Image (cartoon, rainbow, N blue to C red; front, side, top):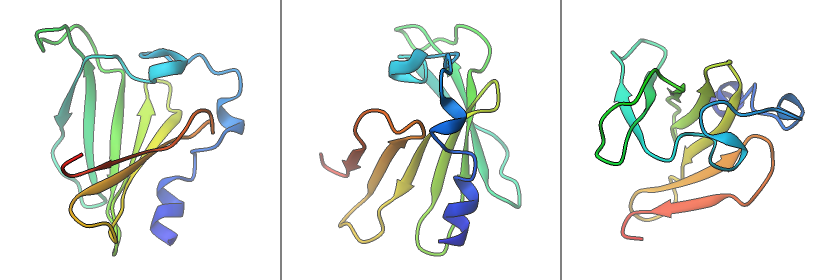
Length: 120
């Protein structure tokens, strides 16, 4: 629980009030088509760069943000930080679910949370 709290420290509705969400807008948060590129792992965790792409999967420009992975004893937490340094959504593993399962939540508290499970 401590590592999850640390990973999501800057994920709050108050920090995103009246925010413009560069890269994907307030609805999608990230570009509709994106490439996720893994960076070299670090001792504190992993990071994945989000790059906008066209419908063929070719890169269109510079990175719109980074997904940071924080390892935990029971589950991993992923936080997307846009190019202005704001955390906009969180993905966390669901260790008690059968198969691979993840929960996705917006940091601004808008809209529903989503659960994606293996085989769904």
